[in-house]
Length: 137
Image (cartoon, rainbow, N blue to C red; front, side, top):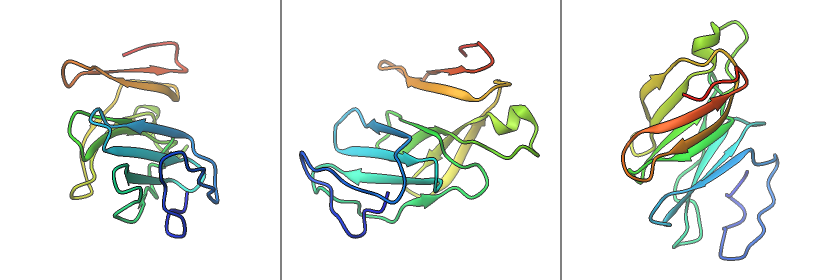
């Protein structure tokens, strides 16, 4: 999605260059995280201002397929598409990213198939994932 030319606002339809693969509101409703698998970009939208204050984060190596907001307003969990040359555990990892300083804080491995869902617990910092390997972790 290209938010440089169009500012999102309440009830607005935003057209981008690629389709959106996942969206997630932060629990306070201030931020919306938008992932685009086709161009491997993640945008953080400020819902109060109706715009993105920073450029999209591009994931060259991991790619991005799913995104889930965490309890911290500048951190997300995401899964990518990875490279077929990577081992399955690394390719299907969940990544914990700080958008404040654009640092990958931690990787969570365990799935042997593509991750199909990420859900954050509403009461603590735990999360659950589902995968095409027929497991939930």
